Amino acid sequence: MRRRRCPAIALVICVCAAVACGSKSPTAPTPAADFASQFDSLWSTFDREYSYFEHKHIDWNAMRTTYRPRALAAADQASFIAVVREMLAQLHDIHVVLRDPSGATIPTYLSDRFVNFDRAVWLQYISRASWTQWSNDSGVGVLDGVPYFTFGGWNTGSLSTSTFDAALERFRTAPVMILDVRMNGGGNDSIAIDFGGRFTSSTVSYAYTKTRNGPAHTDFTSPQTRTMSPRGPWQYAGRVIVLIGARCASSNESFIVAMGRLPNVTLVGDRTVGATANPGVFPLANGWSYTVSRWVEYTIDNLVIEDNGIPPDVFVPASAADFAAGRDPVIDWALANK
Image 1: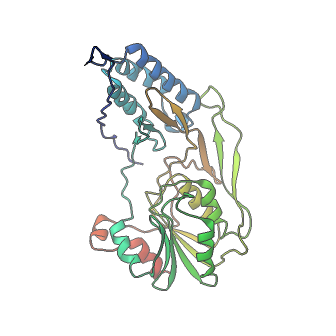
Image 2: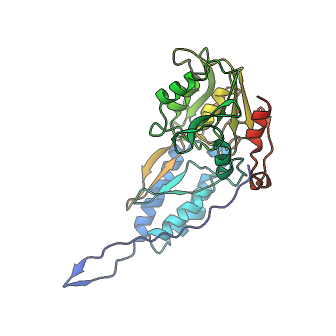
Image 3: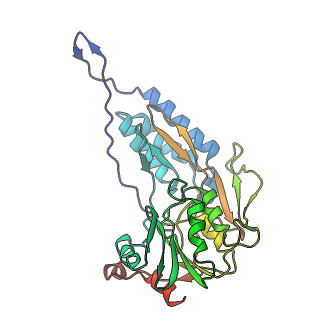
């Protein structure tokens, strides 16, 4: 996977000074000792909890040597956060983020791979699909005679199994359907696998995980197998074309790798991001917090999903020129091969 540096951030932190005799005194800078405790706490938490040091070939001790002096020399909290963010960017992990006191998420790394989904072009396609929108980019329609579902994110706030089940009932006898998850960056594993349960007639093992559980970077639990089981009164047995690409991450990759285990499913498009983490949230100071990836997820064939992603069964090239011309090559392939 190609890498790119995260852009610098500008953070403004406003602190009300104490009022004495009706006048405001300037806020004192955060003492270096506090930056030391913040840095050491974060570094130690990653050292104890982070799951991908070995996989990503990260020398965490060297990171401490490089970045700790700079962090302690920071002029203020914003400058300190900028140094920490630069250090965490070396992990190339989209699940490692910082959260400011307002709760806003500040990424430490973003993939620069071309995304084979263009929302403006997609809206043109669904305009001819008798589209029913559930929320955001999730919904269902009939595109050139083919049932076409999209799932914009695996979140209970935007999707429900009852809504999906009612829509699926309409297409029980359809010979083929398309599930488009190219715009889906993840969410809740449980709902993703619940949806997948409408397509499998038996319980299938699709992945396994190992979770950090000791002080050494190689300390992990024994493998925990992940499974998908049948759900609902019946299972769809026709052909299923699942559209995937470089925006698909996290729990969406769980859905994709699980669906890919089924004999009637074809994964079409481009390789997924490769980002799975089971992250924990940890406090820093002054309202800041950060997340730490805590497990390694493998496909059932022993491939680490992080950084590698899930390859499609059928690769369909797509380019900016295609989208500029109003074409979606991935949808076009699915409709041409229905």
